[in-house]
Length: 147
Image 1 (cartoon, rainbow, N blue to C red):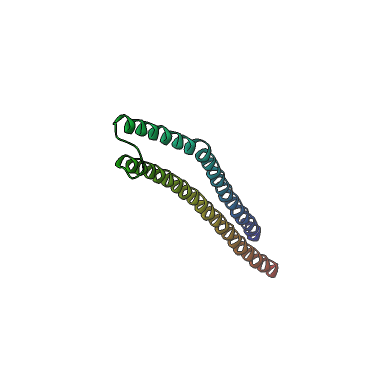
Image 2 (image 1 turned 90 degrees about the horizontal axis):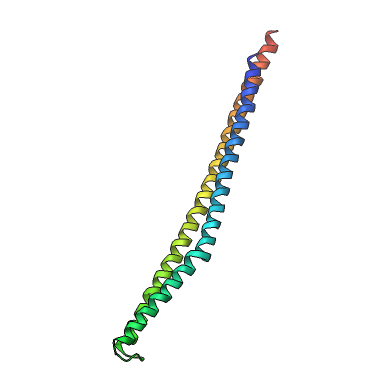
């Protein structure tokens, strides 16, 4: 009758593997959803806030240049200073965009790894089920031979 325990073990192994796979797949789906939410927040809240702040900073900078009494026209120091200010701001925004893309990539990679772990857990469950099934068959055959 030990073959009955092996059959139960086989079913349990399969169910545990499937359950673990489902768990990892749900975690991967949560990671993808978090990435979507973070992207939305960046595009609709953070980035516009950064751009608005940069516009304010440039306005202040420009007013200070004009107050200094220096002439603002092309090929002058004040013009070059304004251009440098704009380049720095554009660089800051590009870095923020890059960081956001890197974060999205990290979320995506984590999701892929979690799904792979889920497939691995499912495969482990199938191996346990196959092993226990083979034990059950062997045990059942032995019990029939003895009776």
